[in-house]
Amino acid sequence: YCREIVKYRRDVVKCCREIVKYCREIVKYCREIVKYCREIVKYCREIAKYCREIVIYCREIVKYRRDVVKCCREIVKYCREIVKYCREIVKYRRDVVKCCREIVKYFW
Image 1 (cartoon, rainbow, N blue to C red):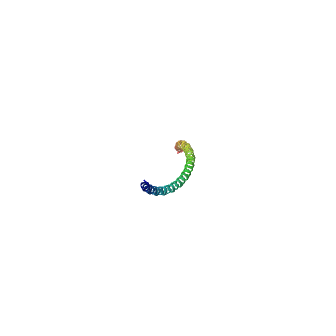
Image 2 (image 1 turned 90 degrees about the vertical axis):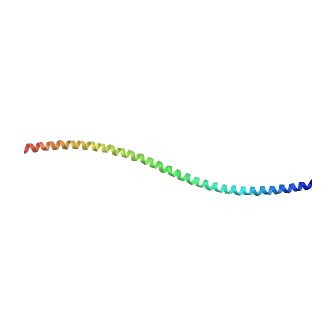
Image 3 (image 1 turned 120 degrees about the horizontal axis):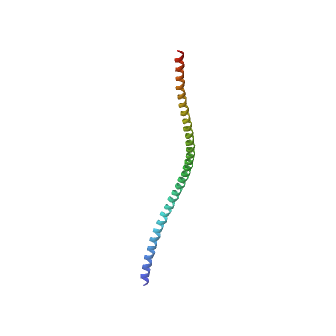
């Protein structure tokens, strides 16, 4: 019985050594994974930083876009007024030309 027990003990010790070997490999890979995860977190933080900056710039663009749209509306409003006055001038020009023709006709 003792010999059998010693034999099994050796097998158990051998098996335990194999388990320890594999555990060390697993720990090694886990460390690598942790290292890569840290790198990923670092890059994610960088990406988040750039995203925040992009959001800030986008808000500025939207703000200026509103100002530009407002300005363009004002310009369109003034252009319409100018067109209105130009039409009036054209109308009066015709009247002036007509009047001048009448005067020329009258005096010639």
